[in-house]
Image 1 (cartoon, rainbow, N blue to C red):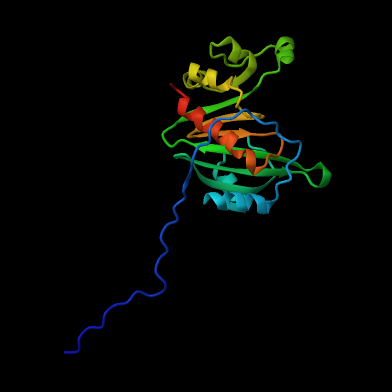
Image 2: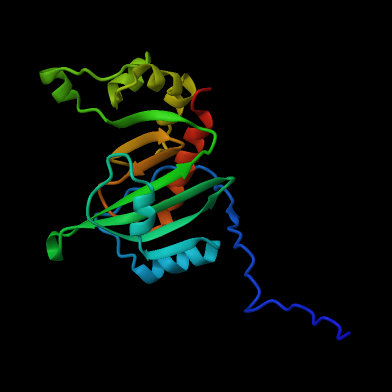
Length: 219
């Protein structure tokens, strides 16, 4: 009897899954002013992500569409990244609306805490004059300083108050809180949206703030 021939696999061996290294959390530092425009190019964003071992996508559409919730700015999504900040997943991208001199660039930065499950909550800086003239139907958490500075809106006020504890009030008053247009929570993600472009050098300021925030929420 002719011995059976050994069965050999066809094609190249399967590649091992890529492991994304965690980026160590930096020490908090005072918030730095955001320049009117960021000169960071796509190659600079790509190099920044590569040095951390993070993913970078020149076309950020896929990452932006995966996060299909929240008050996200419309436009072209570019320079998306994904990685780990400390032990938590993070991702973000730039959104460009308009063209030429009228183009506007905003940044979206997100931290994901897998065991968090938040109803949608939106936080923005309050406008004291508008509140005085028009009034406010916003959610108050019970801290006069926090309530006078921040607008909290949600269809689920009890959920918002349960998450925004005194530890969060204190954090939001710290000098290292970076400037943002909107802060948004939904499900397991906390996100900030800026009104102006930022460079890779200040991304850690935002991610450190979000990391600290989701760690304190509900405590």
